[in-house]
Image 1 (cartoon, one colour):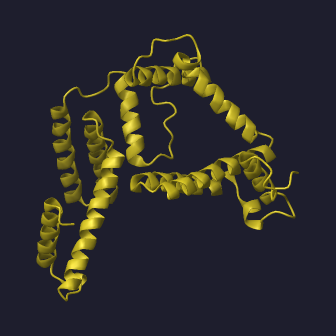
Image 2 (cartoon, helix red, strand yellow):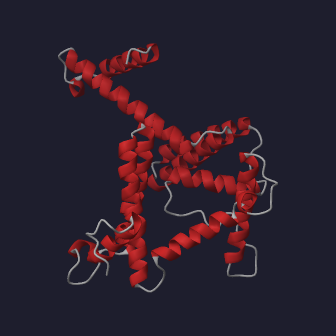
Image 3 (cartoon, helix red, strand yellow):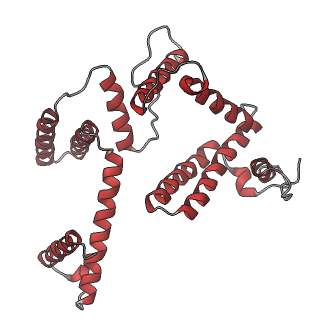
Length: 276
């Protein structure tokens, strides 16, 4: 095995060497040796979210570091697969190389029919659909929903399922129809609450959220990003209320709901006037 301590190795090859050393029985790291695909998967998701967070904050130093952490996850999974005789990190790279060339014939081939980003998106989706059809085991056509990963965040998965369904024509054409559905689902939540059945309440709230995600998609808004920004706005305003209460000599948690609401409205007004 090449010496992973040697800086003479190309950076990516050195990373592969480091991971191989960490996973070497008897001489490797006990923690790394105990890991499996299942135990590492949560870390992979976490690192992807940390990349997205660094992008949101515009922190290029953090983005560099978080991309490194995410790359380590790829190498970690590939090393475990190599040990199992399934595939190597080289296979992973070759697979994505082939896929990118195959899906960009207007760049790497003779097809020059792609003139803008919208046309490329349509062509990309068509090629993905053809690839899914080729992977289908049965002779019947695969579902339009094939390949939408179960592990995606719920809002992201809802949007992807809705997009797939829309390609078959199963979609609202007018946002007003979705508003009507929102009203319907909201009423069903009220009815479930009156019945007091926790499972039914959860089901109806899920339906309400699913329709809200569909409305966002229909008007061109990413529901996951919209909720993330709403979370950030709430956090900023809540912290503002806490700070305002402390400045005035109060403990926020000891204020009445009416007093807290008054601070909330004051924080909102300051934010809108650009005082924050």
